Image (cartoon, rainbow, N blue to C red; front, side, top):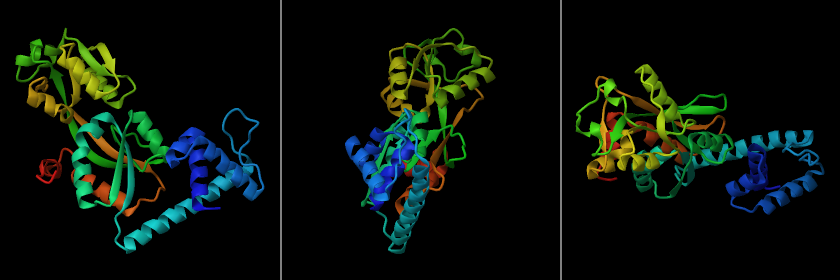
Length: 308
């Protein structure tokens, strides 16, 4: 048995999916099945209960999974410690994040990190918030970066800073001429929202409840880019992270407005599975993000640096 066998088997059990385990390890679904059968032959025991419609391990399979996780943890810990002793910063960091962060807030940090550590490969996937957490829990990625993080027993949450939500309108919108808005200014205008299961949407709904505004969305979308396009064609106003509209504001296709006397913050966080070994590269990347967290002076320095 090689360490790769245990890795594939552990990924299969965590994801309960042959296709997901195959994708995580860069092999075919058939190869995952072959690995499972090879392990059953090697240990002369049935690992997966094939009489069940749902994915289910036998008692022997459960014991093997527990032992495989321990072996993998020790192996990864050894690798990390050896790299630290040799002061080696290399390998791959696989990140899952939401569109607004991945497309607008993360790139300057990734560019800076790769310049400082050119032997590290950083892979970024853009996902809905719930799928980011799922990726982390299933060990499909090393780190997740989300807004409005929810703490769970299985996740470690590292604050990444905060950004600000602003109201955006088209230059042709009736509110575009105002320097700042009163709550009453929003009455009677069409509201473009994120889908209901997106954390920023839930936070937006709470903001309107606090303001005693009954806002029924005219449109709902699953990502910030589509929301912005709808606002640009003057379909209504939206509440979005300020960092996501800097380019449109500069070009004049969108106007950003603030509510008088109210600052609307959006907390951001790095999440990773508890117990997962962090490589030296992961530790350096987390340090760079937290040292330059949005909303702090360090963040502004990191983003505006001529090196980026």
